[in-house]
Length: 293
Image 1 (cartoon, rainbow, N blue to C red):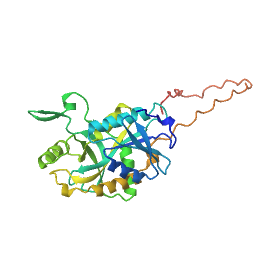
Image 2 (image 1 turned 60 degrees about the vertical axis):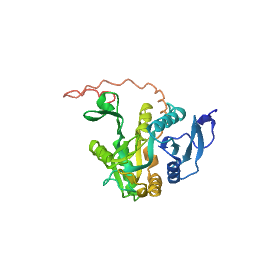
Image 3 (image 1 turned 90 degrees about the horizontal axis):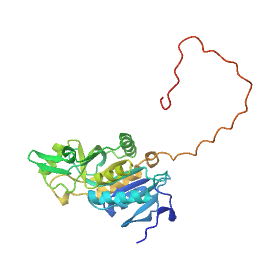
Image 4 (image 1 turned 135 degrees about the vertical axis):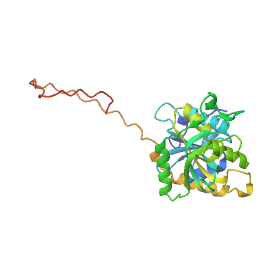
């Protein structure tokens, strides 16, 4: 299959934000929140939806698949294909979707913002218990979104009337928790956890490799613990996801594009010779160093 690059396509300008979800139902909720008419943009192995938000910011929404591996591969493909080391590159990547919430901090319907994106089951079982890959000396299990971005989003959501809001660590797992014992073990290892999902760390890892900041936003569909499908509220969580994306302050989440370079100053005609002026008595001030305030 031949994939046309964005500069060969008509429609909205290149997007400056990439939103990665797992499944089409989550993508549809995000797109409803964004408004506008989406346009399909092909990618190697798939496609994403591009929409011009009413604020003027263009956003790409990608359903990348379930699990950290699929999410990392999809996000990296979009970042490599549609982002360039110029002003057209993505400015921010958002991992989004529905999640399980840790009671009592994040009951069903809560909108969750990650102040840490943590790979909770990436490591090894040892005689002393679980050891993550950081403890084993093989890498990182944590990405930290910019606190200013998290605070900005939280403020915008509260201003829009989202009063069920929690901020904390969002755990990425490859196996969804289905027992009280595992929920307790995760809470013991991560007392700041508010939710668990399956994609955030993969998305954040891909973004980090491309030098693009990332954050994670989730809405809670079920409690973390014993698997009880009758307690799931997926429709409620998707509705909360739509409302969250309708409220996000998109223009404030991306820096303004660089302006044109200032024109060079015209040479001035030489004036009459200036008389030398002696410095006033007292200590001389050292010249200010370049780049310092």
